[in-house]
Length: 428
Image 1: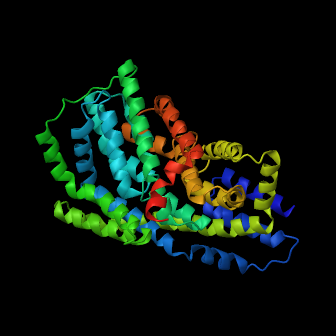
Image 2: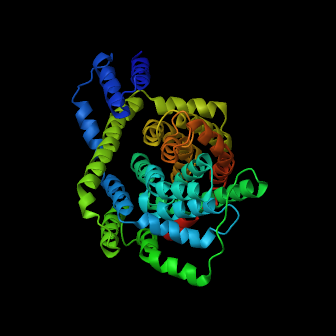
Image 3: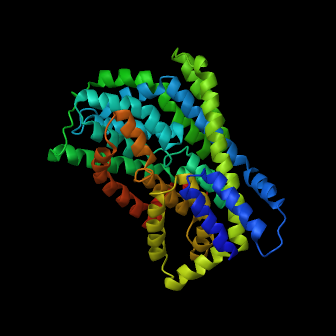
């Protein structure tokens, strides 16, 4: 009865579009008030505060702030021009440029929304000017943006690492190869669409080595950012949290070096950072008390016993988890899915002997595909809004890109060796 009140009230609050962090906190409070057990309400602030008392969480506001500074410092434009010089001549043209630019920006921003709204503004406008349809321009932008939280740094992986008590550094390194494979697979689909004549995708003339060198020099210090961040983490020089601080300082230095006026944007950047950080942290605080109640009610153990009662085959269980996560991704944002499911799934994967770092990449890829899937589909809505295209047409245009993304998900799920290669090499 108590558990029914907890879950039922949460679903009602979500249906009423209450902020998910508040919905978690209020439903947990109702449980504690009406539970047959004797609970003190002081548990609520204690658990919520304890849940946020984690050093890696400091990385979240820094990566959010770094992405804001990079957008205001003209960095996104230089990334796009360099990607254009490299792959603009390949069949599929600016579609490939879009994906390569997103992969590079992924090594700095850590968020799919930042990629879609920041770099996507430049990409979509350029593609429309070249003759690409508005729907396809938005679709490629949204599909490539979800690489952001896979290639480190990643706010999503920080959240998973803290909640699952897993090394964030190992998670960051584990995301590198899957992110690259995702980008390559999306480029293959762009090439197929262009070669088949299903989409009009003009190409640019092949640039000379001299022209590529010029664009490289302009973007050189920008391209150093992901190398510095990832190299520092892999070499054990900095923690992921310290890498976030370095990313902010480096973005400010680049803004000054490129003579872009970013200090007049400082109040807005700080305000947006504070607002987004507060939203994430309140969600995590609410999830902490909610997760504690699930543990008290032995929900993780019950789910584990149920799933293992169906099958003890890890491959089948991972398939069921993937299907569930993809379904949840259609209705809930990525952070919400993580905080609701990690307490339930973690005991199960530990019982099956699945590496939690490997599972973290599986979960992150699932929830990122959710950001591309209606009815929620946050990245799709942002890209459609920038392109000024009907959402229905953008969704139709993005459908082919689910194929390479699902293939990548299956490769990540069932072949853990290549996912864990880098973390085992550097941080074993």
